[in-house]
Amino acid sequence: MDFTLCLTHACNLRCAYCYAGTKRPESMTWETAKRAIDFCLGKTLESARGRQPEAQIGFFGGEPLLEWELLVRAHDHAAAEAGRMGIALRKTVTTNMTFLDRTKAGWLRENGFWVGLSLDGNAPMHDSLRRTAGGGPSHSLCAPALDFYRGASTNGEVILVVDPRNVVHLADSVAWLISEDMRHISLNPNFSADWSDDSLRLLREGYESVGTQYAESYRRGIPLRINVMDGKIRTHIKGGYAACDKCGFGKNEVAISVRGNFYPCERSVGDDDDESVWIGNVLTGFDEPKRAALVARRGNIVVECSGCPLRPRCMNWCSCINLATTGAINRVAGIVCFHEKLSIEVADRAAAALFSEKNPTFLEKFYGS
Image 1: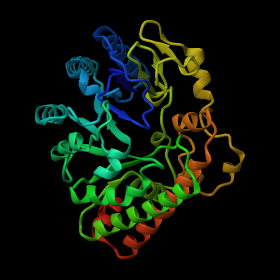
Image 2 (image 1 turned 90 degrees about the vertical axis):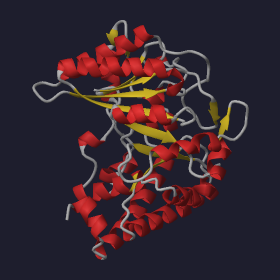
Image 3 (image 1 turned 30 degrees about the vertical axis):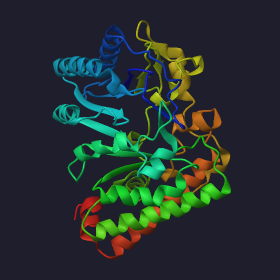
Image 4 (image 1 turned 45 degrees about the horizontal axis):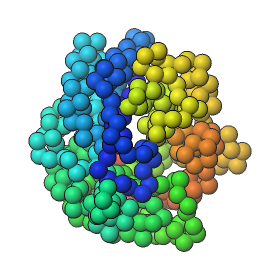
């Protein structure tokens, strides 16, 4: 089971597109964290059915590094219990980087964390929507932590949110990240935003530039991992998304709010007040009928999608994005359709060029030869 502890609602930034709810000084107690860990590890062991049990613990917020001592204590307890139970445990944390110093980065590395670095590229793109609580720019507070995650062997990934209000800077931002030797980049569109025709045109231009930069990097012998490129290239190679590639929304994925309520995904926690997606809490466990009903509704029932040849390679199945954009976990929004077609087009163009060139870096990464 993958489970995420939302450690706090507090945050020192006020990002315009944030989906994590109102920022307030409310944090998870140790008792709630321990109950959540014990419950989720128990469910992991219970569902293994003879296979090697595996789990992933994630830390989220607000800004989780504001609760560093709780994060460390929760990690240590989870690691000890997982070891005792024979569970292989992966660990992740998503941070705005403002509190990420050398000591914390070293501890996260030593303990095997994968770190999501929330940074919207260069200063013009980042500062347009990621401001401090006082309204000032935050890029200069975040970017220094990139020093701990440069190069190919990094355990961190830059998470760059693309929004209609910052998309004009997308190409330059990715170029800047590449120049800073950031090899792992995740482009996460704000699907809930109001995407006009002009902003969609800028998104297309930005993605086309990203595809060109991606191919040029491989020609220099420097492999990048950009989610919208790598993911679509791999779906071409294997004929679509496998079941294990898709989100476990409510089934084998759960987020635990500050107050101990269970949600199917961290994106659905918000202000922790939406009863329609509550699926239990740390005191009583899962509300199994409600959880089963939620899981049964997952997918995509949009008729127009059924005959699309790109459907196997499309993320129309992402329940949390569907919920955020259409209000229904099984209905995909038009912006998602636009984005997925664009991503496939750009990724396929770059991959076809590199394949035809017999680019050794590309072939080694995707084909092992």
